[in-house]
Length: 207
Length: 207
Length: 207
Image 1 (cartoon, chains in turn cyan, yellow, purple):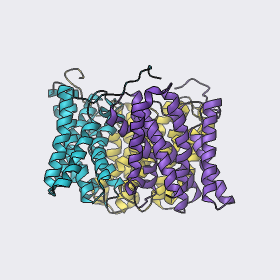
Image 2 (cartoon, chains in turn blue, orange, green):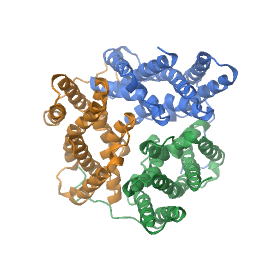
Image 3 (cartoon, chains in turn blue, brown, purple):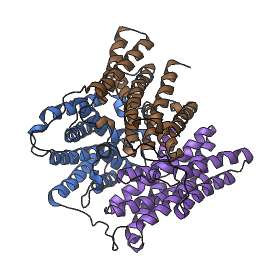
């Protein structure tokens, strides 16, 4: 298995877990768990592949990806009640998935020889759209819109770190590692210590 | 007209009716009816064609499809007030559309020689995404997330039945018929008799 | 720069402003502004390019587009508090963006030699989907679903005017100008004078 495939598998599995946790919060049946897990797991990567016009969407080329999301769904269906807080677990797994999916997007775009702005966007899009779809379908406030948290910023910083690293080294492993670590570190710091950027504050009240 | 085209036409028309009914519940004007009808009608099939990288999206290749959704929208605009319950009618038409769209997705994937997991997913995605987009845009709880109902399950079972049938017979007609009947029967049984799978129940309260 | 590219740039920039205004209403940080601005700015055109199977999505072919959306986001982040009503500004900029994006969609479809129903749909879809995504992600009632306003209708009338103009003249400039002016005039009339089409009214109460 190549490094990129490995990243895709990991992102699919972990995002699958978060989709299934969202399904548990909506009290769905097992097929509902599988549906939401798959949507969350492959949403970002599918968008990436469709926009970049790749020959085949990654999970059509390798249906094992889907199986991996299904396993995640079933796992959660039978074990989620052992968790103390499913929301908290969801947030942390989502942070982990972000830290894997951003490099997965960056890696594919780099591999296709795209310009750096496209590499940046593909990193952010691959990382964030699966979770965004999950939250929109479940009618929850998308994690990416939560006030005073780093989310899009973490993805953006990770993708930027990758782009900068490519100017320094040719090692794909190093580039993707820098990307993933930066993304996860910022997101984790936000969850743990409340790291954030200044948010927009209107002087007159919202209108 | 080929069998597959016929299925696409039927799915488009019936999903168009459900989109227009949703528009009536949101009290839109006639163009709003047409917009929501088209979105619902072609949403699932468009996703299928884009992901499978077909030469042309089905309604770009045959704009008559769009006309069919427009007719559905206009029909509903002028007759919906004769209905006793528009919500109930929407649910039943949606069940019918599901029973036609799942085989439409399965048929296209089979015709392209895709592996069975992809056939399965295309059946479910083609069947469910038009309605999902309709519900998300209208800010209603998606039918697919309703607690204690078979929806994704009906689509999944229908697609699975089709896959199994392909191992037994070469007849496309028989395969797609099995698929449609299974899907509709399960969804109808859920609406009529409350059939459902056990849903996830958390022991500790939702957190 | 060609006429079509110019239209795409203008649509991206103005839709970017509306996305950033939506971000200001959700009190996001600067990266959140950029994210929502880009989503709104390129959403409609991306859908157009993916459905029409163009060689490359417009902003992948020309990353300057993305830069333009980013500039819009930053501009709004530092100036939005000078506005008297951000909601009202958002609505008017959205009307302007609609008047530019509908011709952008129509122009691309015409340039590919598509049939007139596809030209019509591409005009409406390119014009409306960016704003629709913005509103769905922000969990606001989509502008397109607002009761008693012309929105989809304005886009539809503009695209229709363009189609009719193509039967009369070969001038692309005239066609796109007619399209844009019709769209904006109807939408502006709706905002200023309350122009609307009769909406659906149920005789029995909503059910």
